[in-house]
Length: 284
Image 1 (tube, rainbow, N blue to C red):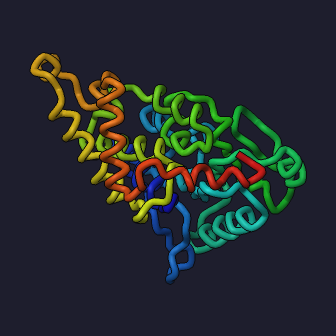
Image 2 (image 1 turned 135 degrees about the vertical axis):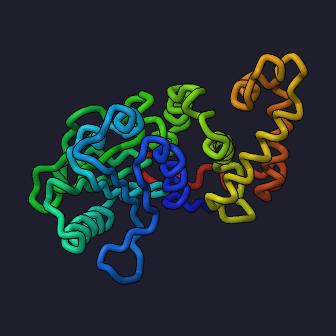
């Protein structure tokens, strides 16, 4: 899948965290000069995360006193030494540039795949709670590790857990999100629908285009409109939104939507040549 994972996650966090007044920066200037770092920055105002904010922040972040959170995201590859070294550098240079103390910044590595236990042991990482790891080693003690496959499927973890490498874990994350949260804004709802469908098609074949956040938003809006067009008068009168209507689609309707989406993404019919190319990776 040709997938701008860093930007795609960043757009989802912007849409989901803006209502609770958490700023999400996709391009972070670590040194006060270009180039920008490929890292996400969450920032809050105030002394602590409030209840509404904690309800949308993942374990390992929601209880931190830090008001600046750097997220290093690994989607198609597992966490390795290079990624950890990069996270250490981000943490150091950001604190230096912003003149912040250690307690004011939290740096987290998000891993869509599950690292091998032997690698975790080598780096000293131990599980503090499900999916949340910390290391006591001097150079790594600042870098928290979140393994998305291992995070509990609770509502506060759901937005990041949507990017888990395992399909059942992604499904559990979607199930954990309540309809009022997803449908509170049309952009968030459309983006969620586009993201869900494109991730379900992952591995079916080579895509003819790069999946950017804007393209995922367009796909989601197209799906919303097509679902609304197929709704019966009774469903419209009952106030069923696209998410509820999608869950109630027949097999033939779902197949039609997937066929249309494949055409949008340029996947040839029946092409399975690209099925799970990531299976060669020893981690999942």
